[in-house]
Length: 216
Ligand code: HEM
Image (cartoon, rainbow, N blue to C red; front, side, top):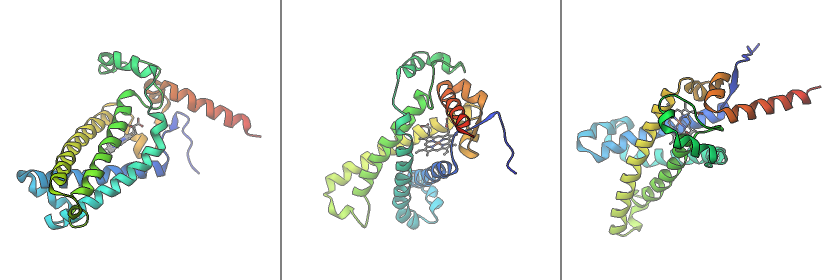
């Protein structure tokens, strides 16, 4: 029988976690192989996709899988990522936040997480659009050279932007103790929820109470 933990709250279902880790896995492969194409001193990184030749073929497909998988995350979470008044309080007190003090009645995500979310969808849209333009041998032939040059610039800038955003994201995930279990096993402690996402915690509790009252 499944053991019940009364001090745990479910934050992500199994499909949500699998979805997130597909995105993360594709991101690592695309980012490393892409850096391998870009900098001669990083050429050896192309081997994450087998051989340099294979990397040239696979990198765009890995990117498309990442985009489609992230789109599912986008449709799951966009409604939790609108900036509200509590986020403004959080941002104004960012000096306290970085000293581990919690400010504002934060919902499911804080402003930092909301910024990660919007930055990720924006850079992924740019990466996909510019990526199609420079995708040999399938689509690049259909575009004039100046458009391909512009697309290469957009692709590189968006890629560097996303890499920086994800470095911040991973740093925050490790820095806020108790966050990793949310995306690995699906649960957080009630203490974690109360401390970092108090408004979300109350909403979860309210839903649980309603469910219990409905039980015969
Ligand atoms: C590579 C290592 C990664 C690690 C260790 C990691 C870790 C995590 C963790 C622990 C959470 C749960 C946070 C919470 O619910 O409060 C999370 C959420 C999330 N992750 Fe990741 N992640 C990684 C990569 C990525 C990538 C590559 C993307 C997108 C391109 C991404 C997008 C998201 C989004 C959108 C959320 C929802 C919360 C937010 O907007 O920040 N993650 N991640």
